[in-house]
Length: 301
Image 1 (cartoon, rainbow, N blue to C red):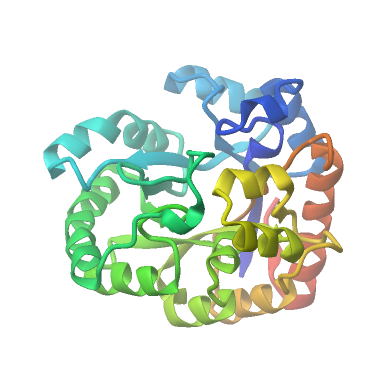
Image 2: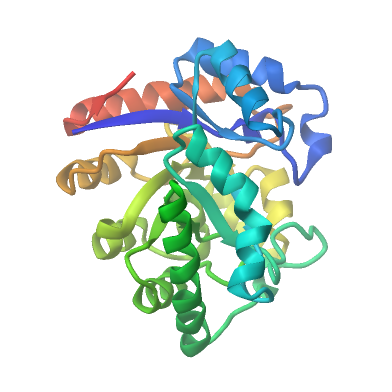
């Protein structure tokens, strides 16, 4: 089986903490990503908004669109309203042959509030999450019928954050709802990334690789800090960072065993003053090449 390696430009262009990356341009980030060897990038807010402009922009740098964040409000919207809210992005991603939209519920999240500890994130009950999953299934089927898969992104500070939340969401939804599997968010939440992959691998459609610096995570928990405090302090890094704690070789071995054939996207938001984006993004790329080779996963370039 073959996989493609992409990257989110969040290391160069952090939309939640823009001061961290104010000295970097999207154009410079695109040049860096292409020079390193990444085949695709996830859409950022500072890329062209129109489809024709975005296509030309991607072509200029020789990369594909390998997904992109979609802020959902299905908890407060009815299905018809939510379709209209995300229609432009869904139709654009379908036109550009993106593998998915990266959908996450944001109507009640605290992930972007630096003043609120991540411990205060919205925690719903099983019935509530399963009812949401049923509603999400209708939206996901519409998205797929429009031409692009919906992959749900579990995220720190959000209502679907840990392994239990993921279980409920998957159990309550149809297979139209696929899972974005994010190693860094799983470890941060206290979940075992391998256990989640073993349980829900058949629903995984898109993969984010990011590592975690355990001492920073321990500090976030001990001091009851926010998600963005953790990001600013360096809780995340790229695969291959010797300061990281996740065994990515074991994960790529599992991906090979389950015949995964999608994108592996490096997404590691960091302070570029501490972790130069080009250097760390190249580190992540080289590490993925190495471990995929060891696992028998062919890289499609």
